[in-house]
Structure formats: C-alpha cells, structure tokens
Image 1: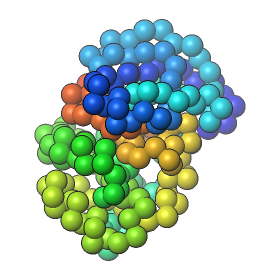
Image 2: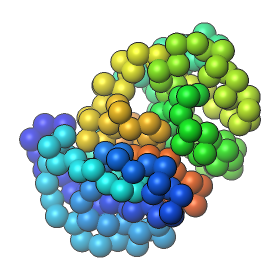
Image 3: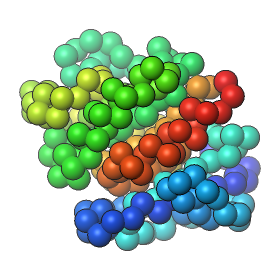
Length: 212
C-alpha cells in the first residue's frame, strides 16, 4: 500500500466457538469498531505486514474511505470453467470470501454467507468467492451444492490470486478470510477468520449506506 498513513478501526468478533476456531489467525488491529457500528478513536499507522499481530479471535479492520487501497485486478474461471472477475461487479458493494472445501471454519460460515448473499442482492451487494488450495474442482463444487451457495467463485488452486492483496489485509495463510469492497473498487473492510451473519451484517451495512 506504500508508506502513506491510514486510519484503521478494528471490530472484534466475539464468541467462544469462534475464538477456538480461529486462534492464530493474523490480522491488522488498530482501534475498535463494535458490532453495532459504534466507533472509538484509532491511532494512525501504516498497514504493513510488520504491524500485523496474532490474535485469539477474528478481527475486522475497517478502513476510512480516504485511505482505502484499490482492490487488485481479479479475473479467471469459476468452478464451472466460466469467466468471472471483479471488474464486472464495479458499482456494487462486493463481499469477497476466500474459502476451501478442506477448511472446517469455511464450512461453519458458508450457510450464513449464502443467506446474506440472497438477502442483500436487492441492495446492490454481490458476493464473489476465491476457492483456494482445491486442486479438484469437483470437491469445491460439492461444497457449493452442500451449502446452497448461489454466488460464483474464482478457482485459485495455487493461491496466486491471494498474493495480489496487501498481506496485512488478506493474509494468504488465514483461511477463511473476507473482504468488503466498496462501490469504487476499494477495500473497505478486512476480516481474518470465519465470520457469522450477525458479525458481517453491520459492517456490510456501513459500506452499503455510503454515498456512491
């Protein structure tokens, strides 16, 4: 992201089961944003891998609009071999979820993500997945069917797409991870670890309520 300073606020996603599932996930944590959207003042500082800390629960990093980095170009084939990418979703708020069929916490969050996808489509929200470390698309497609997931996912078996993101906002080793990308194609929220609908909903609402 370069040397410029950014202002961040972090929402701690609580719950004993969540803490156990994602202990050891890496995320950038500066300041606080509660699940209800209330905020506290945060110290400014560069978002770099050096500032990332190991947390015992998932954290949501919320970036002020003036400091949001542009999401990288993402394009490729989905699980059925059809072309899909971020450019075609510009103008919508995009929830980008990184998952794998082999990942237990991914299974835990999948039903909630599928539900929120259906509930927010009329609000100009689109979901896009990045299926990673699944060399066999058949296993990934079975996962999608099992959880009634209606949004497409880029097939990224080697994790190459994940390396295009700032590691402090999307750690390639933290699976699952979720980003919220605003209507201008900038990263607005970063979540390391599994997320529930109750946790994602208020954060997503903050971004959808912003002026275009």
